[in-house]
Amino acid sequence: MQLPNLLILGDRTYDLSHRALVMGVLNATPDSFFTRGTDFALDAFFTKAEQLVHDGADLLDVGGVKAGPGEEVTEAMEMDRVVERVAELVRRFDVPISVDTWRASVARECYKVGAVMGNDISGFGDPDYLPAAAEHGAAVVATHIRLKPRVADPNPIYRDLVANVTDFLLDRAQQALDAGISKEKIIIDAGLDLGKTTPQSIELLRASASLSDHGYPLLLSASMKGFLGETFGIEVGDRREASIAANALGMVLGCRVLRVHDAAGIRRARDEIQMILDAG
Image 1 (tube, rainbow, N blue to C red):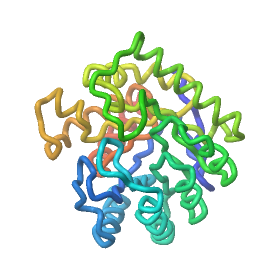
Image 2 (image 1 turned 180 degrees about the vertical axis):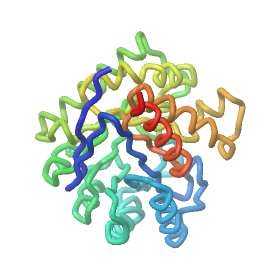
Image 3 (image 1 turned 30 degrees about the vertical axis):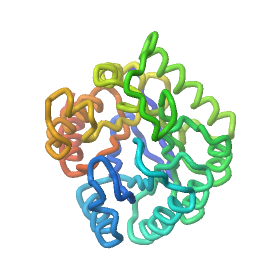
């Protein structure tokens, strides 16, 4: 397993050869699958951000539209939810800020106020997404998805799941390179639960070593997700231990950005694993 060494986020350069970054999730949505809107109000949102940073999050990821089906969120609504929050996070905290959006227009406005990464679960479906990132020197996350965000995909079928996901991600990474984004600013994400059944998400988690062997940092977004609940028969509010286990396994298998709701638990697991691996 050959891991990428460097990741550049804004004016920070991270050596990931022996380190995983904890990315704290901030939901600026009233209908998030996990928080159910408890962090949507401004005071609650910034209290959550402060807690994530206190608990050891290395960066924060702000999203204004949930990935799954739901009520329509227009471009204007998404702008209203995230742009000023991103600007305030940049003012308050000394950590990189990512924006979780598939709209280039939203990403661009967030870059203007200080975001340094665009986390796009659509696989760069908006043709202006990569040019916007390149224009502002932002990093990007290329995520595998079978259909489109917010479209139900209950019975996805793949001829060869790992090969299909790998080819998709390498194609999107090449698109980012062609758009003028440096390799050190490109992250890939297998997109667990995005157009995958529970067995398929588990297969991709087990394949993390293979997926991380292509020169790009691999992001793992497994926190509190449905495949964990279905596997263990647990509701969304009781998936903390399963999430820690999934992220610990992912880190050992090469995942280098861990997108999580529970920064404290994942950070402790990460630090323990790093200590054990470094001691060897």
